[in-house]
Amino acid sequence: MTFLLNLLWFVLGGGWAAGLLWILTGCILMLTVVGIPFGWAAFRIAGFAAFPYGKTLVDARAVGEDVITGTTLANILWIIFAGIWLAISHIIAGVSLCLTIIGIPFGFAHFRLAAVCFAPLGTRTVSI
Image 1 (cartoon, rainbow, N blue to C red):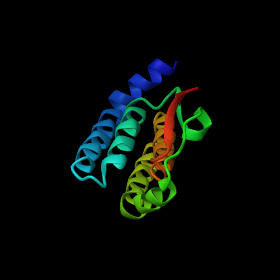
Image 2 (spheres, one colour; image 1 turned 90 degrees about the vertical axis):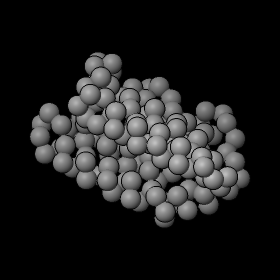
Image 3 (cartoon, rainbow, N blue to C red; image 1 turned 45 degrees about the vertical axis):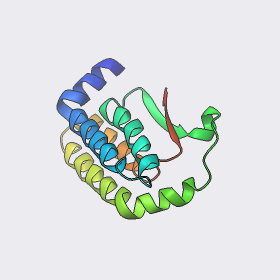
């Protein structure tokens, strides 16, 4: 069922567009030294955005990794400059998809992506 939902999401729900936009964002962020950590986070989220079903994003400490000092401050800066706008776009897409019965699962995927927009650094993708 997860494979089918991921396939439908990728083709019909905007997974290809979301994944490509996160990859493009990561490439742009990698052009500056300050943006490199954000670029790596964007690449991780791109895979999650393209195929969100059967996966979840968790804090890196939950999987045994150390969080880099300053991650909280960096996430706050991310929220101010980019995260809020990405979250708003995912919420609008989610609400518009939830207007139809068939689009409800895709709308919930956009809501999960909106939550990711607030703290991309210090998260890892894990299978559920």
